[in-house]
Length: 189
Ligand code: GLN
Image (cartoon, rainbow, N blue to C red; front, side, top):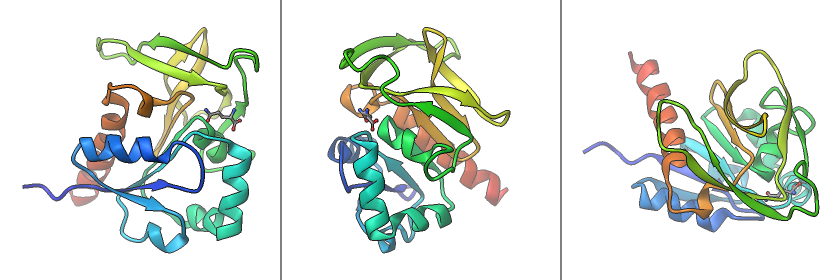
């Protein structure tokens, strides 16, 4: 049998437990990451939603900001995790993000988003969500809400403005795991 993927979930603040649960449901080994050494040997990393200011501050406190800049495996940032990866923060993906973009008063909402390939739409949960305001040429937009990109990929980095860990639909996490497997097989080929 194929060796399970070993995926870290940044566990300093926010929705990390829910991501760990989805990863385990999909047969991956999930590791809570609180210190730089927890990144060793990971096949990928998820940055969860929460509060980006708090996540950034805690990452700096533990040296995880530099450790992440040196981390080479695929990363998936959701909501606050997407903000942390943007041009104004770790600058690991060439996007400008607007925080609380759907309006502060719109605390949360759900929307069906089209992820292409003729697939059933994904029910996406947005909580004080950001959207992608500007994207470089290497960024591939995978889904939009009202014309605003909310799911995108640049090379090994995947970002979502919503919370795929809060529904029973595991397809967005599967997309990330498949991206990791494809990257690994193209290295072997
Ligand atoms: N509004 C939060 C921020 O700016 C993100 C919200 C979330 O992750 N659900 O950090």
